[in-house]
Structures are given as C-alpha cells and as structure tokens.
Length: 222
Image (cartoon, rainbow, N blue to C red; front, side, top):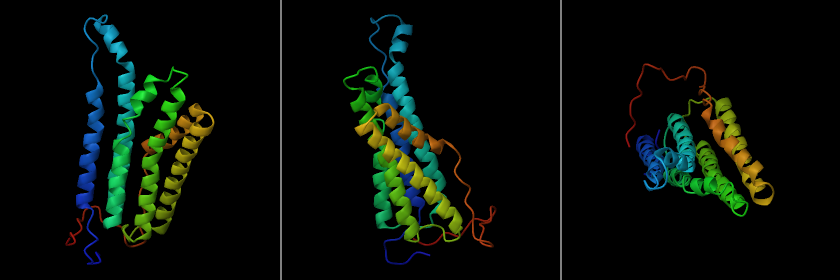
C-alpha cells in the first residue's frame, strides 16, 4: 500500500518512461552507420570498411538490450516507487544511454598501441557505471520496502548476491584495465555484463501468497 505522503507512486509510469528512454537509446547508434564515398573502392570494399561501425553498433545494441530485458523483468518485482528511487532510475537510464559513445573509439583504436588502452579503460568504466547504479537502486528499493512484499526473502537475497557479484566483477575489471592489463580488464567487464543474457531467476513467493496467473490485481490509486 502507498504511504500517502505524496512521494510514493505505483511503478507503471516509471516502467513506461524507462521503456521509452531505452527504446530511443538502442536505435540511436544506427545513425552512425554511413557508407563511405562511392569513389572509395567497390561496394564490397565499402561494406567491409563499415566493419568497425557494425561491430560498435552490435555491441551497443546488446548492452542496452540486456539492460532493457532485465529492467523489464525486474519491473514486476517492484510494488511502488518513491522520489529517490525515481532519481536512481534516471541515473541508471543515463548511464545505459551513454554506453554507445565510447564503443566506436574503443573498436577503432584496438590496433593502435598508443590509444588502445585508453579506449578500453574508458569503455570499461562506462560499462561499469550502469551495473553500479543498478545495484545501488536495487539495495535502496529492497531496503525501503518498495519490492512486492509477497516475494520470498530467499529470492531477494539470491538476487542481491547475483547483482553484487556481477557489479564486483565489473568494478574489478575496470580497475584492472586502468592499473594493469586492459585486455583482461575489459574481458572481465564484458563477461559480467553478458551474464545478463542468461534468463533471470524466476521469482518465488511466500507460501500462500503466490500471485494468481489468471487474476489481474486491482490497481491502487496514485
């Protein structure tokens, strides 16, 4: 139940806004795909020259798509939002939306010894920020009573551990890329991010409080 203080709201509008932002963010990278001038070799050569652009686009699509999928799944775990939860959601959307920006420089400079490390370090940290904000948002919401109260405590604990471990892996990778070996660091960050390609854990509920699959819950007033 909402607390009536004016701060808490249902999640519908937050979910719709998140979907809209991520839908725009996932389509914008395609605008960077441009064929070279027709005079520069054959059409085949021109498409081959687009290889780095296509790779950067694919990477950005996967990263944003993964976070959208988990955001879509986790949306039904939340019963309500509050002001600070919404601010954390905005911060999360901002960190995800910017992930395509360093992808292209990272790809373009992979073969450049002078700049490859810089590109990898920036990309590693930019990929780490969404995971970090996601974790902070999860712990804030779960400790402030914003989750569905019917969820089993074991499920919440397992989910917290999963988010914590993946974020720790991202942070470790970003630090390793910065102070040691950028190849190892970016690999750790990429692996932690791609873990979310796996299906999320199915939510479990307290005995006798499982939601009916064929019963639509009555909307609570905003």
